[in-house]
Image (cartoon, rainbow over all chains, first blue to last red; front, side, top):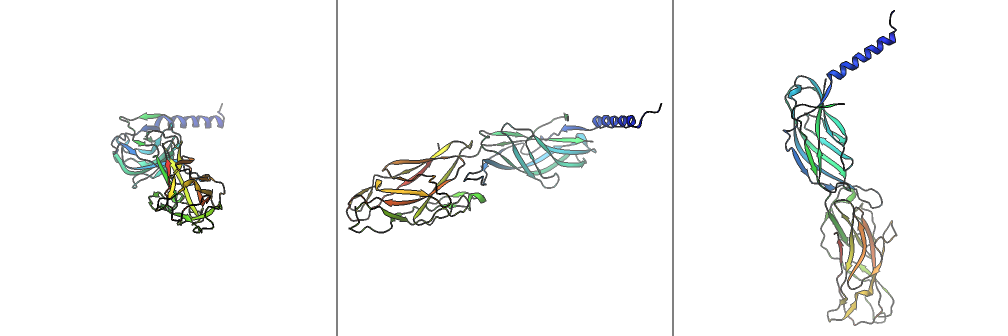
Length: 156
Length: 196
């Protein structure tokens, strides 16, 4: 008996799903050559009215960092690289960065990741200068807070 | 989504500090780079304003108990919060400030310190308790900083919560309840904003 068309379609979808999960993967990128690898950022209280003669509760700080990613394990493959910041105990941390063009500028909130590169990986190292600005709720940052970023790569 | 490590996996770190402790107090003429609302920051202004009787007392008025209006040499009308014209100088003297703490909580204490008396060149005295003020502001008639009378010592005016811009305009008056010798009487008061 000839199988129904719907059954064929389901088989095809399952096959596609298996293929996708076996080849695509996400890896943490080695960024240990980043300079400086750990940066202390002095913050200031942000300006901005918040009604009734209230002042902003946000603090902000900035730094310039030379990001250097070791992409040797994925040479000659296509990849999408993301900057990620896990959720923080001090609540939402907003991050914005500019670049010099080898990676993409962007912004993210803690708990998210944002694309900084997409395409074929043709060199072992990808380097760019990031001008980073961080904004957090100053009422929750009672002591120094380490924001541990990482880069992830999705490879095809 | 699974996250796999590829060899050495490190994590670039930014360490942020808490917000800095800071305080700003302005009495009379002050300075700011622009306004707070447009990203301005406080500047130092060491000018000391003078408050005097609007009209010099004549012998038939001295000691009658009829309060005498005072005026100032202040020209500060605008709030550095947003540029709004909160005060009407020279009769009104701007008084305002704010504090910041590393956690955004807590408060500072606004006080005024007055000597016991105003003194003349010949040593005659008028108690500072003869001078009072009312407090208001354009757009906010509430006396956020209360009206009062100098006490010849330290007088706490109010606490200022972190992250709140507090301001008012003071209008001073002389009670004129005592007959005093002729002369020019002077004294200096100091306003303080203490952040523990």
